[in-house]
Length: 333
Image: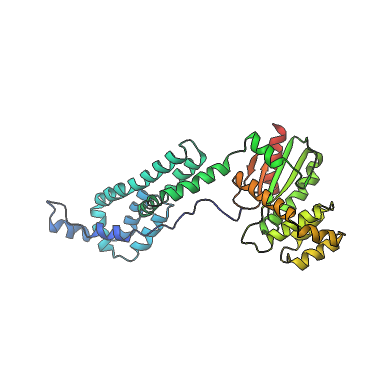
């Protein structure tokens, strides 16, 4: 999985205020005091019944349902019985408040496209939102739309021009240039998920051999203190024909990627240390890392590892089964 993840779903708020309002409503016109008294004589399990009714309205699996159950535990059966006697008023309020969620869905889907997968996700997720959350999100609609558009872009397969762009150049790779399937991974040597993806890469090389071409791109994340230096170290090793040896060494020692450790790994894999240091400190090596990062940004890479198989993004690059299935599909097509 990526370090960054998709739209943040806020926690649902309780329905206490709504329940108390329903319980404290005035009697409907024409209702007699004796009728209410008679109703209160049969209050057993009223709160449980009221919770069931509310959960039917808002959805049994939603946070709102759980909040209602928790809130009703604080009320007496007598109070809940009053709520049951005038539940139609509660239904009307829920319906009115629910329009905020309908408005949210309409605005988001209009902005990102009604036929997109992201719109489908919005429709599904919003079912679990209480009205208060929908109202709050409507106040942040521009920010949410920007984030969802970015997610939608990230879901789309790359066009031919973008595929060619991220596969071009002299980035570290294995497999023939004319392979039917090209994999391009954007990775960070300090990212623990990338370490798992590196293990998958080794499995892929063993399973598919010359059927695939695998290209490694640098995408060190800013909050990983040693990631950029490690990226530069891998390219400095690549200059001496030992990228993959350095790749394996650093992923096996993610907790030690300081300068001294990097030089130690260079010595361990048999690099000319003077040449390695010179390459590590060169502006050219730094520029190559920055160029990879820019490429990643252009194709909506938001976290690491990010893997493309013939331009299609793989949801979980650290899962051999998922990557293998994507390759098999590409080979079959």
